[in-house]
Length: 413
Image (cartoon, rainbow, N blue to C red; front, side, top):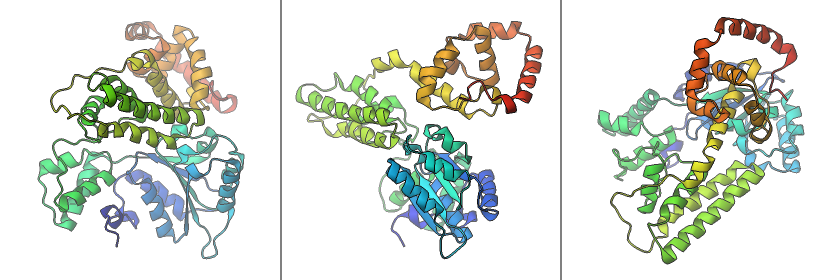
């Protein structure tokens, strides 16, 4: 048996899976009733929430051979054709094999037609996994049944207690609560294994939801842990806050590392291959090890990145894209990638009349921060709500919804 507890406690049967009960019930039904032509599945969620292990349970329970493919290795036309060939190939030992396509959000954007075609009538069961499904081509996601993987705090506590009972670990209720703040089960079980071997893991200090301000403290004080901050945010915050903390050769080394990190971010944006993000993040983290002088262990005054003060609207635009892409309402559904949304759709929405934008905000229940990117203020929107004839609007929307199946949506390009 592997020395890793993550492997030791990896689920093998349906009953071994923690959380996502409703999704697991539907996935089990899909597996038990699978026949050629059934839709592929898409498991989306943060790392360590059970996406890949659930796919492995599906294969194990059904007696299907499993063929795993990392989507980041399928970037060229030849790679896509090879992937399609593997999907079509029938196993000799059973009726079907499960094709597991990990990191589907790193699939190339070009030469996807052969994959799209095979998804219209899959000869074998297919499961995609991703951390950010909105980065996947609509041509892929539209042919999948998607499941959002999340693990709530109560499920994490139950998981912790079961492992502690099995490994004879005694934790207080406070320690279990602290450990349950980790973002995923993998982090939890890794920390439990460290604790069992006598390593200090910082019950009261470490939190997987560590924000930008704490991250700046951690790295400048030679601690690598970065919480949940994305690589672009990490580079911006460090670039702003290393200046003035070190100088001379130290500052030069830090700036060189951040410049290298920024090149990887540029490569990510150019290729739309988000698997390169990890290199940008890892290089930025390494600035913690570039100090020559002793780190200052007291309070550090942090500055909000100046570049974000100018470009902060891009995050709000991204949030708006995600909400419109994931909506179930036909009238405001979008079928495009983020680049097209930012360059074509968003300017079009901004050109709408206030009345039309107000209706969009109300219909999609957009929050104040998200709808501010459309030039709408909270006061203007609330004044409109007070004066608008919402009864007439709702009747109008019902008529539109009835016709949507034949007419398509306003964003359905």
